[in-house]
Image (cartoon, rainbow, N blue to C red; front, side):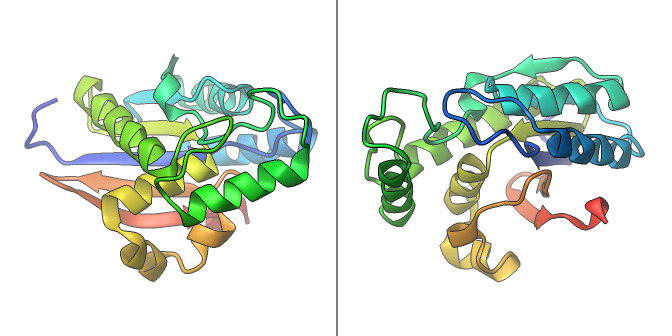
Length: 200
């Protein structure tokens, strides 16, 4: 892409996954919401579709790709900050939540099974920059995860700006199938964060 071309990049939060450790796929409700999201996105022509390698993201991307007539390109840098079950966690769910919350509050802290919020934000920024650079056109879709997307936004915009656009999103996260719309024209800016109006 020409570096002077204005870019639209939409980050899609994956649909609802089954509440299981490891790498769970979508629930039936999640698939329905992914289908609704895909139909909404299909109203606009898109040039590229990228996804995290985790199953809940890939299944969401597959639904979107079918509706938008796009092949999915997998990018490992779009994965979540910490994935429940990505490494043995004998302490259980409570420990996972405690580590998640601490890594959100202390951006340089590295959890047991994952990366710091700062490191995740940096790799997400690298990933979306490459997505834009490699795209054949100016309209790009990315399917990723709530924590990783918030980490990216905090790195791009700073906490105060993120909270000004989407109050509570740092603490509460991004809802399933929410759309975060970014624009790039010499620098990144957020057009909207965690919008769910398309879900009705």
